[in-house]
Amino acid sequence: MSSTSRNPLPPKVKAEVTAILLPLVYSGIDLKNETKLAHWNLRDANFIAVHRLLDEVVSAVDEGTDQIAERIRQLGAPIDATSEKVFSSSGLKDFPKGIVNSKQAIEAITNALAQVIQNLHDGIDKIDEAGDAITADILTQISGKLELQLWFLESHL
Image (cartoon, rainbow, N blue to C red; front, side):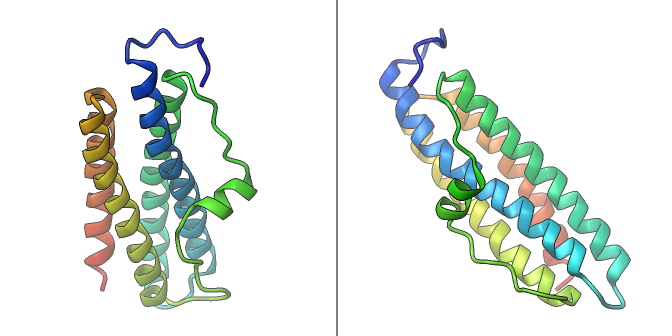
């Protein structure tokens, strides 16, 4: 943990919160990549609608992941989000290989997105218990945006 942050949270809280946030960054990066994979490898009669929807999911996930990573930096910690670290730490299932239809793509991304949202909810509770209301609020806002995307995806199933 870097001592350069003048954030008023106690060092113990910063360390605890950072440990909760880092896996969320990893799964967010992985979800973004998996969703782009679905976006690129999609082929069927619903292509254009689902193709565009997946780009909206990517945007929401990317924005939320960036906010989480920036919060980690506000707390003074570095971020190791190399491909190797993300791959080994994400916890998400791999997206199906090759060309996929809309149903396959949406089911895979919906499952991964639901897992990320559950991880956010778990993080909110733990971070709130640790005493960092600001970070809990940030995660709550992100969760709300991702839950909207989940609803959009589930509406196609």
